[in-house]
Image (cartoon, rainbow, N blue to C red; front, side, top):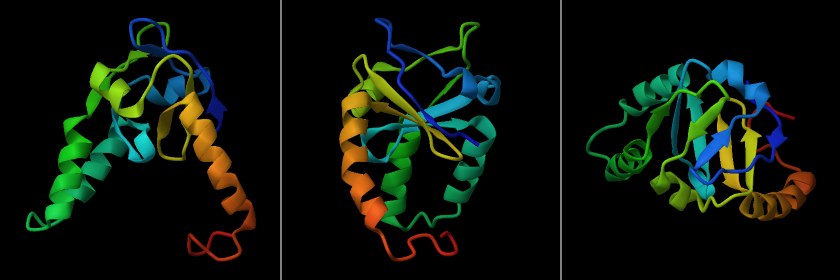
Length: 143
C-alpha cells in the first residue's frame, strides 16, 4: 500500500527520484499513465494488469468506456527505476500533468500519484474543507 506525501524535484532530463518508501514496491517495474485531475498514476505492474483485465470486461459497444480506455492506455508507459531510484517521465505525460520542477508525489493506496506541487496544494486546499465537513457516507462502510 502506498501512503504519504513527498515533494521531490524533477531534474532537467525529466527524471524523478522515487521516494525511498516506494522503491521496494516499484523495483520490479511500474506503469505510469494519465490520471484524473491532471495528475499521473503510477501502478505496480501486477495492479495495472488487474485493472486492464477489469477494463476488458466493458462492452465494446460502450463509447464512453472505449474513449476512457483509449486515453488511459495510450499514455501508459512501463518503467523500471535505475540504480539511484530514478524514473523518466515522458514529455507527453509531463505536459498532460503540467509538471515542471516542483512535484508532489502522494500515496493513494493502490497507486502513487504525481502532481505539479502548486496544483496539488490547490486541489488539497479545496478538498480538505469538504472532507472535514462531510457528514454522509461517501464510501459504503468506511467511517
